Image 1 (spheres, rainbow, N blue to C red):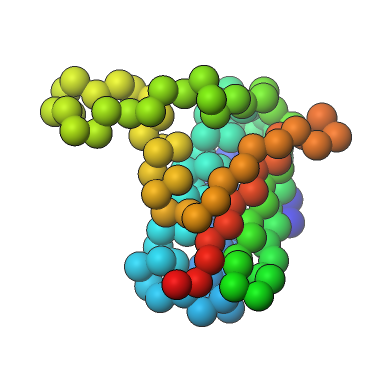
Image 2: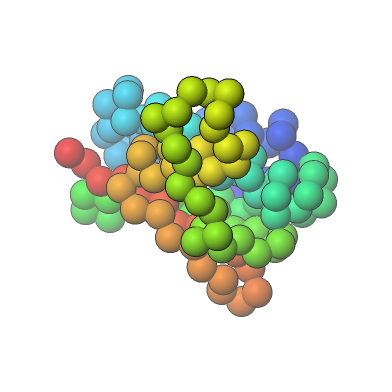
Length: 132
């Protein structure tokens, strides 16, 4: 499904993620983590890939394979290299923390696998959550 790259699309995407996590059989806490990871990723697409609202679309897909829920987000915005984001120092006071990188850090905490690719000139983010 395709959605406008706008913050008001996030609720519709979250509803689909919730549906996917229920279909997959995740408990409420794991489901919340997946929903939050996807919300963070979509917000980053709007803010960083597109540079603001209404400048492109977010394509959302999911599939279930054996013990894995696989969520894919695709956009045509500016590329992203996760290796250029420094790991946040989470053991320092809030006032001393860097501004960027926490969202990516938490996405890695909530999901079992995250992969960034460029396919046919589009940015493709694949996030996998496994049972257990």
